[in-house]
Amino acid sequence: MRIIAAVGRASEAFDRFPIVSQAGVVVIVLGFVADLVARVGPGADPVAGTMTNAVLSAHAAMFLGTLLVLIGVVVEGVRSARRAAALVPGRSSDAVR
Image (cartoon, rainbow, N blue to C red; front, side, top):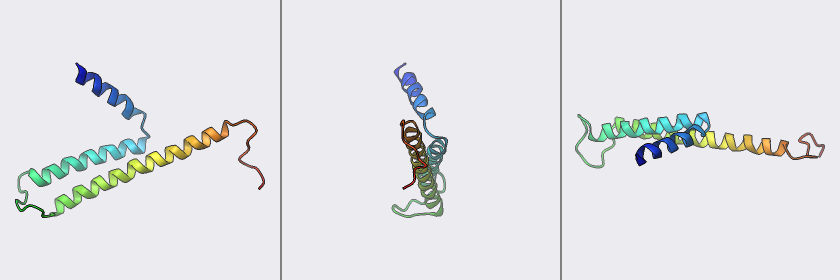
């Protein structure tokens, strides 16, 4: 029961993420699964420390997902700062400097 409650809370938190960050999290998870399959799955190279094309592709996917999460967070931060600045009375963004 506690696991179901924890999954529900995580789902609510995930829904509050910006859409680009949500896409980034999905790409990271897919990259993680691809990395596991490339390292442990059938046809995996048994030599430790080798980097096959499948492993490199999985790492590139996770890197891309990380960039998407970062971009989503930064864009949302800029938007919220602009919204907060617009709510300040007496402050104009069109001021002559």
